[in-house]
Amino acid sequence: MMWGYGFGWGWLMMGFGMVLWIALLVVLVWTIIRGFEKKASDSRLQGPATPANSPSVLETLRQRYARGEIDTATFEQMRERLEASAGQEIPLGR
Image 1 (spheres, rainbow, N blue to C red):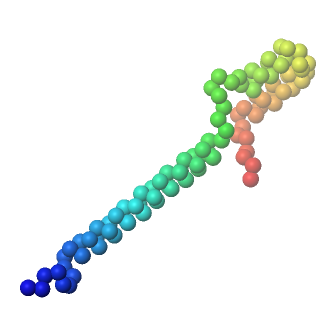
Image 2 (cartoon, rainbow, N blue to C red):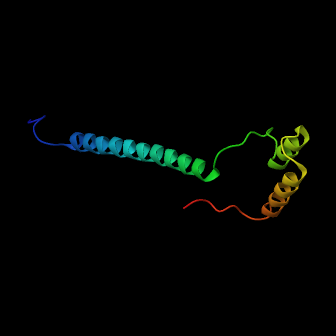
Image 3 (tube, rainbow, N blue to C red):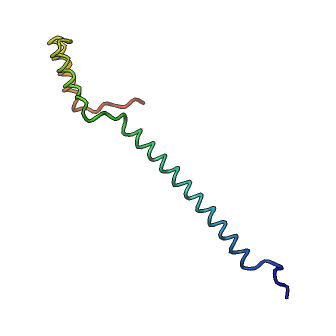
């Protein structure tokens, strides 16, 4: 008799499906943003990366002394400072 007039279950299910897809897109965008924020904060906490094969500060000091760039007194003074500060944490700037 009067088929096609009025709102039936089809309209309700289509509306529910649309809301479901919008919610899924919002969650997806939120997850991507959180991932980028976490990655950015992790890289800020780690600080600058140093290559694995780069010489240590003390080794560089020894090389400079061996090449004659610094004298014995300067070498000993700098070595003592490095060894004293090796056990202490270097405070980060505010």
